[in-house]
Length: 316
Image (cartoon, rainbow, N blue to C red):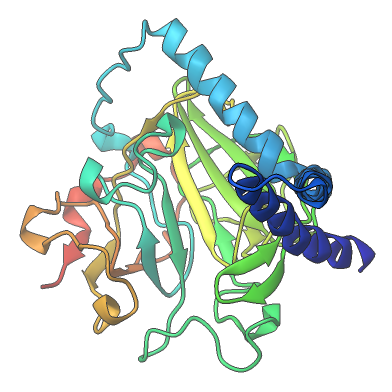
């Protein structure tokens, strides 16, 4: 696609302008002054990937709004209601690659709405997330896999028009979405409990705004839309509908297993949370997690389900 080719050209040529600008501080030559103009190609980059730039701006404005609203002291998040503990929003075994319940292992502690967020993928026994062509979506184990509703609620936002980001390899990508979350859902569970499921596959969302959805119900498929370098699921809980001016809340899970992913430390040099310090019912980076809930014969509202503390196991 032409936008990608222009973006690659702009991405490379802007560095000539930046280098010329640095040299112009030490050398005086007319040619250098003209070459510094090449640094303006960064504007072209922004124009071709507006979601990344304007998404960052909206996050900063949202954080400012949130700070003013709470006098720059966010309230301490209340522990999850024992009667409304959430299920992992997927089937089978996945690996947490970002996120944890405490600051040291947080997804993005300095971004309030994503403070307790998680990124999850599927891995093989070598901790690889794909097999075959790294740039092909279909090579990734989690691409197209069902994404489930984590608890009963009402869909309050649906975005399903964005194309997958292009995978360029070695962590590089080209975002083709209009929103950093790409295709995403926001589900309201109570007055101050909203879950966000992001980076979903285009055309895969099978619920509508205003629809009442049930725990474990399929709502979409995993994709690679938005600010995403490879297929994965991003999910978190926040206190309002707004993606930018909410603050994140801890998610506690029921009906799941959580165990250290063998060999994970070889693919990620960041420190991992010790299992003994991981609060019961929570998950963290470097752990393999799996939804173990079985279908219940008679569906009941979340508020009448059994407490998840009896149904979540952690392996050492």
